[in-house]
Length: 475
Image 1 (cartoon, helix red, strand yellow):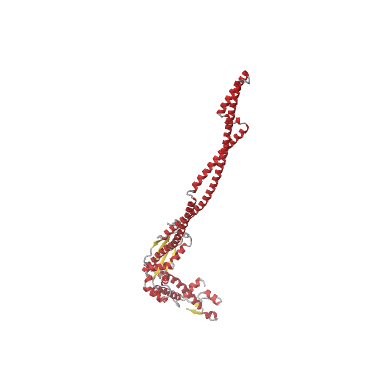
Image 2 (cartoon, rainbow, N blue to C red; image 1 turned 120 degrees about the horizontal axis):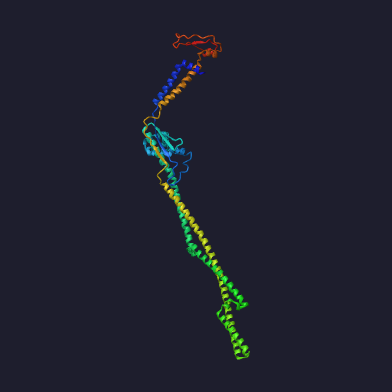
């Protein structure tokens, strides 16, 4: 059916169209009148997901995820929030509601859960599009109750979010308190072991004592090097004494030997003079020879004495060198012993340091969780409190009438089309060719006297179309 044919059919069956449209409109008006009025109150809250937590100092994890707002909307619609709102409204103690619950459930089930389900039926929570705002709407027959219940849900949600944050912190606080006691006991045990070891070994400041002993070993090593040089020199002088002791530095630098050698030289010169003058057997010559022999004997005696002192000095140096080496070995052994004690003490000290760090970390976490368990602030702020609505939100008269007009128009058109299908008529020249499959011989002129609308219509019933009957004239 073309649009032109549809308009012709609607014009022909306008009464059916108007009747159906009027019935649908009447039903819509009756529904608006008979349906109970319902009122909706709306409150709005905003969630701060960007500001850092005042206690932890960081942004809350998960607050920036895409499902955070949807999760908060589900929390808003949870049974826990609904039961808390019912307690704030005093509905959990209302005898009338308890009577209704017993009549509806025969006393089976939990009253608070049933009450939460009843309250949640009128709640609508919608997150803002690309925003952190939640719009909370509550719909009921009483406008005052709508505002009261919406505000009660907002307060219950804020309290519940605070509980959801503080309850894990309280549990963690008890856990860290227990861990802090264990850490403190471990620290005291480690300190006790270190103190007992220090008292047992006589170690008060292991590092300082080790530094003193190390300095002493260094000093002994320095003395050994110096004494080795001295001993080497004295050994060389002693070796020189075996070859020609008169050429020794000690002999040459000895004043007594030098004096004796000077006397010997004078006496030998005098002996030569006297021998040439008096002869070898002269008493004065003999006396001079005896005096020279005595001087030489004194020189030899003094040389032997100086040589003996060199030998004794070398023996002393060698003895001191051996003693110094023994002292160094003893000092090294003592150093190794002290180092072993220091290593054992260092292990105990590291145990104390690790226990101290563990205790400090546990105490820091315990302090933070204790603060979090006592916090009274959340990241939820109320933007708008619900106020008593003046106009009902349902039924929507204008919207219902508009929908009724659209639906009625469609139903009316559908009724007209159905009636036309069940009782088809020839209304245009094209219908003769389309339905009768016969050539058009002519058409009757319009007789304004025969019909008020000034047109004669030639219709064809279904029997005429499909039974081979003659077309009938329809007015």
